Image 1 (cartoon, each protein chain N blue to C red):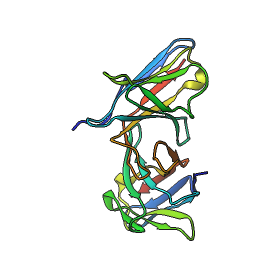
Image 2: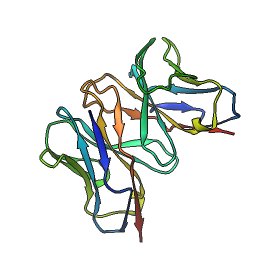
Image 3: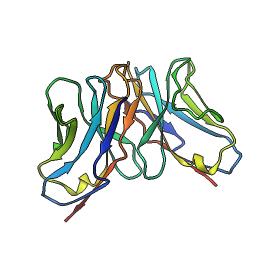
Amino acid sequence: AQSVTQLDSHVSVSEGTPVLLRCNYSSSYSPSLFWYVQHPNKGLQLLLKYTSAATLVKGINGFEAEFKKSETSFHLTKPSAHMSDAAEYFCVVSANQAGTALIFGKGTTLSVSS
Amino acid sequence: NAGVMQNPRHLVRRRGQEARLRCSPMKGHSHVYWYRQLPEEGLKFMVYLQKENIIDESGMPKERFSAEFPKEGPSILRIQQVVRGDSAAYFCASSPRTSGSNEQFFGPGTRLTVL
């Protein structure tokens, strides 16, 4: 069965410092993995997705994630945090190979201080 | 190209009333998905529909909840006889087709409050 675990419920960083949001997955087949961001009272926006091509995936707003099969991880990183990055981040795995449902992690709240 | 549209954005109902949530997918998208987000939780899959067909309703509660996606018009998520536990944000997503790597585009959500 597919599942994702976000290892931190809350991450706090200072503006200009690196961001690391951790995600581990479990999958019985080669997974499709996504990171979505949700700003307060807004919908979800796709940051990036992994679809078995390059293991280092670049997304929007300077975010990237690396798929590591040996560690079953898909951590999200950004070299330098910006105040506007403060939001809820969800690691997501496709529930089945047909992609007809997504399984969301519980989310990581990113706080950015000046 | 307009994104996924959901209305209303906020809905208040009293216990026992009915709630109807509407979702218009992106232009060219024929697959619609509904998710529910309870407070402090991630989104949970409810149902997947194509035009006039429910394909996967494995995440739908067995009672009071139903969904449709008619040939014409938006997809509707209907909750009968609402209870306080139904208070949540309900998100609709759409995609042009299904594949494991296919992105689902999400709407802004409907926040349902049951008094």
